[in-house]
Image 1 (spheres, rainbow, N blue to C red):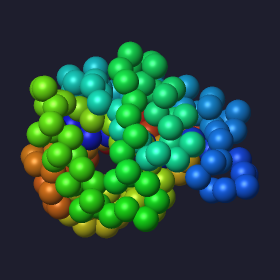
Image 2: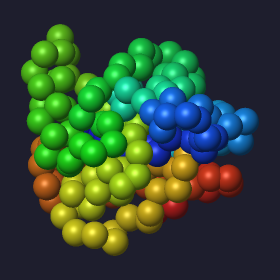
Image 3: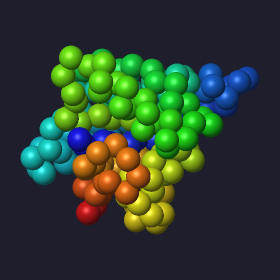
Image 4: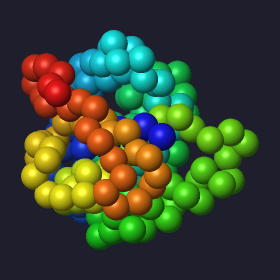
Length: 167
């Protein structure tokens, strides 16, 4: 399975943290990220994301919607991607998603928050520091042998604003 981890775009202030909306810069960054993700996958002969899952918070929902529209797939909320969740909760939720799906996804895009996005990268790679920290709008793509700690290998990453693909 291929997993892309995407940190939500830059968000502005709001009365409640869960209601923070993307700034214009956040929207612009994610609109740039989507075609970069597609091009990077195609150049590596990787499947494009067929499933887009996001934290139920507003800024991740908006981020996921932009990318999902570009990919022409549906974006769905997943509580395991909300702030305070753990990597193991994400593993369990992904396993459940796959078992309930008509067909397993070859590539799943996860949109969440710090520190979970960096924790997931470290979790799947098996040790901290093998991937760059993810700023708002940054993404990284992993190939997973299975959804478990240490079972992934880094394929590429891209950071805003330039989104130059590295690896």
